[in-house]
Image 1: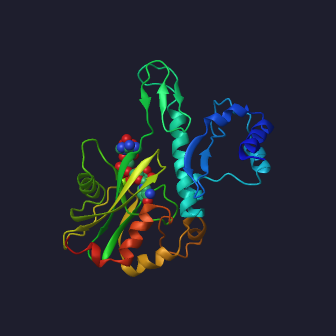
Image 2: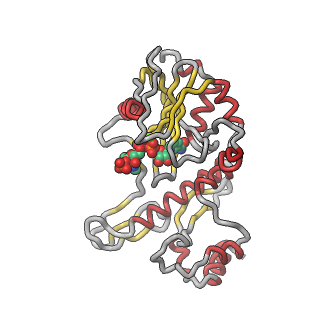
Image 3: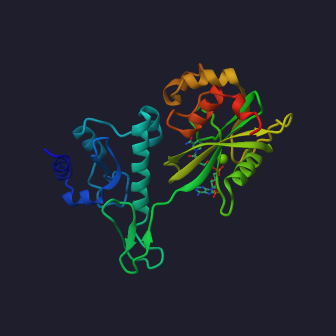
Length: 283
Ligand SMILES: NC(=O)C1=CN([C@@H]2O[C@H](COP(=O)(O)OP(=O)(O)OC[C@H]3O[C@@H](n4cnc5c(N)ncnc54)[C@H](OP(=O)(O)O)[C@@H]3O)[C@@H](O)[C@H]2O)C=CC1
Ligand SMILES: [Mg+2]
């Protein structure tokens, strides 16, 4: 039985129209050139025509269980986490762009799900990402990690912030570091980037930065962060080896933990642990 037939059978079993398969979006392709699609079963939409779908029934039929996205990203390998992140962000974008913001008329998805077109004036809408910088600040021997109140207990990460309109990445890094911890950035190195599904769809741009020698006093902005501190190289190296705050932090045995492997914050911290000197010398 083909996957399409299997999906049609499942939708039928849950009282859904098999036409719903047309709502699928293309999220990638296997090494054997098989296309991968994602479909929103609408289990979380309150007003939805799909309200008849019940989570427990779906879980039983598929012998699985639904997990909150943030937790799932800790459990999956990097490739699957990346696919899940793309699927979730793209499906959510379609769900929130059903109507044209100019005419108020419905928009229609193209087959792959890479855009939507207004049925009355042909305006094309493309999925968007918000640029966000994430910066690991170092003072030469230590790095600065911070936590927001909604992070899993004990988790610390690098400083992050949305780019304001009209700003360059460099300007955003300097402004965010100054706003959140009151420090002045001296040098900046670009590291890498990643798509991130939260809060909607972000393009995370990761950088290493250093502060001026001797200027390391943190002035914490409590409206943005719950805590921030300098961490020694050996402490961070140990924390990198433990990975899942959702399972390991609860017993309080560890002083702090870091974001999951899939998150670019983790890669940024790992890079600093492996080559701390590279990010403190002049470019
Ligand atoms: N992948 C990774 O490794 C990591 C990813 N991140 C992600 O980075 C993102 C940004 O970090 P965060 O510290 O929250 O950012 P900021 O420090 O910029 O603070 C967030 C605030 O910025 C305002 N804001 C400006 N533009 C936007 C926008 N386009 N969308 C939403 N809010 C906006 C909002 O303020 P107001 O409510 O006043 O309007 C919001 O509350 C987070 O959503 C987080 O998921 C963070 C760390 C690691
Ligand atoms: Mg921030």
